Image 1 (cartoon, helix red, strand yellow):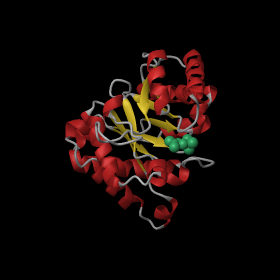
Image 2 (tube, protein in one colour; image 1 turned 180 degrees about the vertical axis):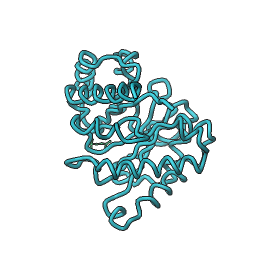
Image 3 (cartoon, rainbow, N blue to C red; image 1 turned 90 degrees about the vertical axis):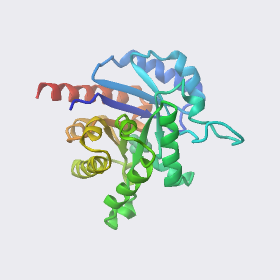
Length: 260
Ligand code: PGA
């Protein structure tokens, strides 16, 4: 099955509103519209409203980097997925930095996935093992537990639109991505879990991304891995040239698939 490729720029807690607007402007000048690649920008909350007005919607979509699972109420400091429903198409959920620094639990991740779906926002659910878990040979168990908990409130129809991102924690912010063999094995296992839960049809329509030290020179190798539909990019998305190189390389990967 042919799935539209997806490249997500995770700008994390970088860039002021002004800087985000400048970067978007530069990206708009260099990035071409490719029908086979969807490009998504995930700035901080403050930037979502201004960027939603500025972006060329044929080129870019917006994602939140997180969002609270209760729609409204007395929750000081929180921004709900419901409040962002008209601003974003996607929300990154369960990023390892949220799990690590904000102590986000499996149950919170499950509730956020459900809140996104309830508010017509597509979750980009991050999955991945730590270095210690990998050393203990717990990768499969960790991925299984993350998937089963996070998807436990979803129907197979909800799940079809979901995006899963394999982001081994040890490869995020590192000097190079995980090896193609490591990514291939994890993506196979993730797709197998989804098939077990929801069947072949759901698994075949679901997109799986890889994230962790994506740089332009690694993209063609990663995109050649069976079952990988795109990338979740951190540092390299803060530079318009390297992000454009990544989008172009993903487009070339999509083209070569069509020609196969
Ligand atoms: P990185 O971040 O590309 O800087 O490793 C990836 C991510 O956290 O999504």
